[in-house]
Amino acid sequence: MGGKATAISYGGATIINAIATGKGAAFGVKLWTKAEVRLTDNPHVIRGEIASDPFESTVLIEETVKNVLGHFGLVGKFGAEVKTWSNIPIARGLKSSSVAANAIALATVAALQKEVDDLTIVNLGVEGAKKAKVTITGAFDDACASYFGGIVITDNFSRRIIKRFKAPESLKVLFHVPKTKVYTSSVRVKELKFISPLVKLAYREALKGNFWQALTLNGLLYSFALGYDPSIALDALTAGAVAAGLCGKGPAVTAVVAEDKVDQVREALTKYEGEVIETEINHEKAKILEVST
Image 1: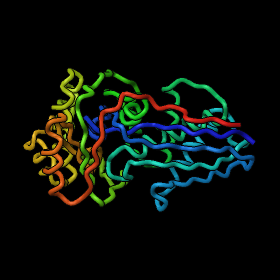
Image 2: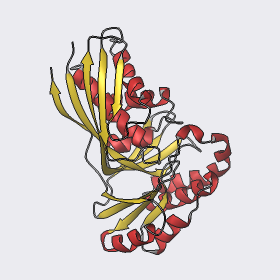
Image 3: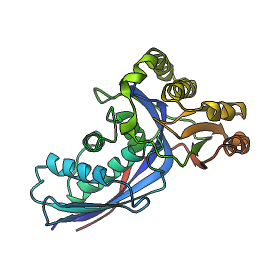
Image 4: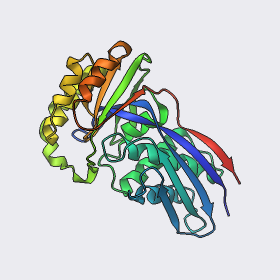
C-alpha cells in the first residue's frame, strides 16, 4: 500500500473569463480547499468525499486521481480514498473545481512520493477537470491563479502563462454569493461568441496592467450575455469598489475594494439576497501540508 498526503490550494477570482476567446486572466484570493489522499492496494477503486458539500458529485476527485496515476503509469497498481474540505461555495463561479483539482493533484503526487514541477501539477488538475466536464476551456487561468497566487494572464488553449503581476495587498475582496448553483455544463458557449471582440479588448487592458478596469468590463459583458442582473456590480462600484463584475460563469459577483470602503460596499451587496464573503488577495503558492507512509 502507498502513502498518504494532504495539500492545500487557494482560491481565485475572474478578471477575464476565457470561455468567449480562449484567453483569460484571474487573481488569487485567500479562500482555500484542502485535499487528503490515501493510496490503497485496491486498484481502480477511487472513493471521494466532499466534506464541505457531501451531496456534490465526486467525479472531479476520481478523474484527477486517475489522471495523476496515469501520468506515472500506476493506474493498475493503486486505488485511493480522497477527502476534501473547502470554504469555497461550489458551482457559483468561484473556481471551486480548479482549486480542488490543484489540491487533489498535489496531494496525490505527494502520496506517491513523486516530484514534478508546478506547471505539471496544474496541468494534471486541468486535465482531470476537463475529463470530469466541470470546465469548458480547462480553466488554466483559474488553476494558475489558484496554484501560484497573484494575477495571471493566460492563453488557455495553449496552456501558457502570458504575464504575471503582483496585486496590491492593501485591497480586500468581497464576493456576493447567491444560493442558486449554476454548473458549467449549462453554459451555451456558442451564444457567447458575439461578445468576444469586447472581451478581447478587456484582455488587452489586462495585459497593460489595467486589470481592475478589465475585470469590470468583462463582468458586465458576461452578465448581459448570460442573463444576469448587472445591478449588483454597478451598486458595488457606486459604493466605492475599485472593480466589480461577474465571477466566472456566475452567479457570484466579485468586488475589489480599498480597505476604507469595505463597509459601504458590503452594505450595497447585502441589499441583494445571498451571502457576502470577505477575503483578501492571495500571493501564496499551493503546498503540501503533510505526508506519511
